[in-house]
Amino acid sequence: MQVGIDMGTVAGGQPAKLDIEELLATRLLVQGNSGSGKSHLLRRLLEQSAQWVQQVIIDPEGDFVTLADKYGHIVVDGERSDGELIGIANRIRQHRVSCVLTLEGLDIEQQMRAAGTFLNGLFDAEREFWYPVLVVVDEAQMFAPSVGGDVSEDARKLSLGAMTNLMCRGRKRGLAGVIATQRLAKLAKNVAAEASNFLMGRTFLDIDMARAADLLGMDRRQAEMFRDLKRGNFVALGPALSRRPLPIVIGTVETSARSSSPKLMPLPEAPQDVEELIFTPDPEEFTRPLTRRTPPAPRPTTDILAELAKAAPAAAEESTSSRPASQPDLSPEEREERLSAVLSEILDDPQAAYRTDSVLYQDFLVRVRMRRVSGPPMAMGEFRRRVAVARAGVDAETAASEGWQTALALSARVSDDLQGVFLLMAKAALCKEPCPSDQRIARAYGTHSARRARRLLGYFEEQGLVVVHTDFSGKRIVAFPDLDAETAAGDPNAAEEADDTRSAAE
Image (cartoon, rainbow, N blue to C red; front, side, top):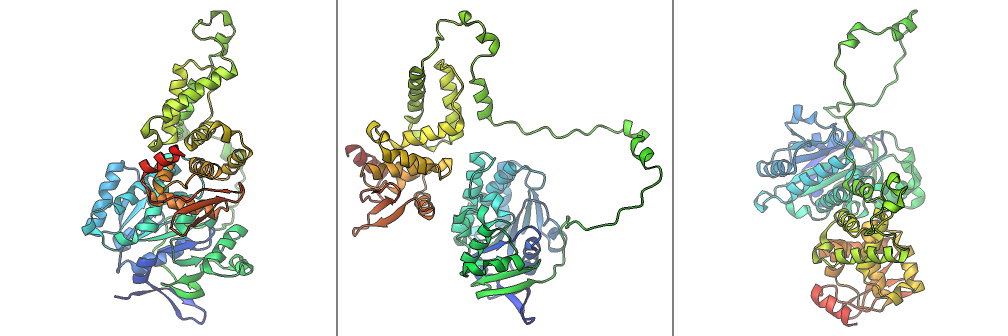
């Protein structure tokens, strides 16, 4: 059944139609700076399609809870345990009820965890409940960031993985992603690239205008038009909207957000006794209960452990003669030797590849203290880099080469969690080894997903760091232009055990 909903008007006053059935198969990306009318557009879409398709809204600011009054959406508070969120998500799909997951009041990391858990619950529903669902995610750059921020790596991976599943694999499960973002440059490319329909609103930054023009297939010189768009005006493109870029004006809505844009208001006339009015306390102020600020969130465990691992207090350092003989001062060479031994112990564990860096770092700090290694602890960033180099398996001769130093410099252009994979591939190229298989790349990243391994290579290629091609037999070769080196041909589907054995033999 073909259902076209009215999104507003095009030039000439003709209605702008959006094909809901086509949208369910092709997904939608909405982009616009704050104040461009992006939330108004989403509300128009939700109101017009409410009678035709089940809806799930991920709402970080609580703006869409007003849909419940008119359209019967269930409001789900995100401040719940993971088990509760997963159970609610399963029942939402089972009973085909529209809902709004409101994350208002949670900090950014809690929002990412709640949204990721809820989306995974929708994604993992039983096959018999794979009914069509329109999944709208506002402020998508928060849940699928292009780079790591101030949140923990676990929260970022959980949220980004859920968003990737929604946009890349959700269609077969009936989930149609509609994502809205203020900044295209801050949105993960593998999430944005899966949308086939676009509604681009007003934006000012050059990098965002250039990406918007690229997605719409427009000349970059035409990107300046996005600065001139008025509030509520968007450029539409996609199989569910238009086969060529089409300016549209979004229509009116029946509900409104609880918050609105600030309006200018004249100041009241100042009373004559204004100083007495301000500086004289109200007697009731002394009887009101004091409201204190919410205490700050606890610091990450890694920071606390790092402080605990620091050198002894100054009071203890003043008397070096009182130091036990079992804790002698270590030379830089001895200290480095002990640190390397601890790193080797941790990484020799077969399960270490699938543990997060924060967990490995905690284990590292504890072992360092047990070995009586004095001095300031290794920083988290340095630890990640050492782990990435160790996992690459580079020998002493290669480590001393100019090519490896160049590879280390290039690895700084990718995020910390990707450096291990990049250095693994660089080492294979410098040593002329076969290109690692998907399983081996996945293990270096800390996952079992071969598909994610292939996406990582695609990301490196987008950044201009590598060139991936195949030989006549279908084996993969990865070239590094900056290193003037490339791997030997390798089978991307090789089993991990065989892949490791072959590399060790060579």
